[in-house]
Image (cartoon, rainbow, N blue to C red; front, side):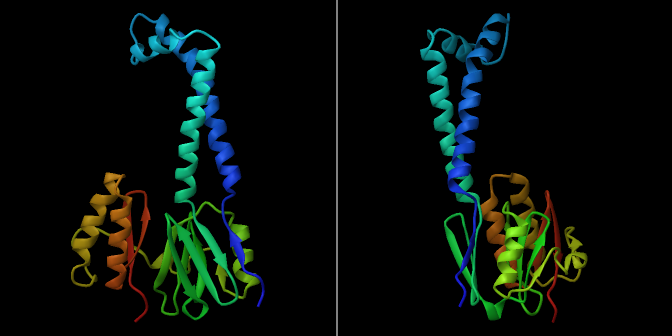
Length: 223
């Protein structure tokens, strides 16, 4: 068996980028504070005056350090949300948000790109997984094909999806209620975990869902 292939974001690269951005923003804060203090009225003028009251070089060093710390937190958050894909001849593993899932080769008919998402499809066309993916698509395609898994640059079922509207016909019993609840979760923006859970519930009913912004599109697998 060939050695497994792991496709993931570079932790060092992500952290360096986020910390660098944080330091850059921190270095701009003293200049922004000086400008706000010079205005007769401005939002956040109180915090700006506080920053402006700190003597140099402590002011610039302090804002740079705070920016670096905030960048560090953003970096950890980005890594937590990023997808790691592990592929070998016998299985495919997906890890994201602290959750790991594995799929046997026999379960997977096709791995495909759908916009900015990675999709794993079963023999019946049902979705085994759908995850947001910021990884290199060329690297993913190579990882799957080198281990003998089928790969497609586009979801072959994409044209089968129909936009969901309340009371849509053709859905199993209970699916409309779940889609309605999921629509509210998508609009809430901060309820991503609820939207994922509702997608899983819809999958149990045989309903496959994809999103475009706040809009939901659905299809049913092959009978």
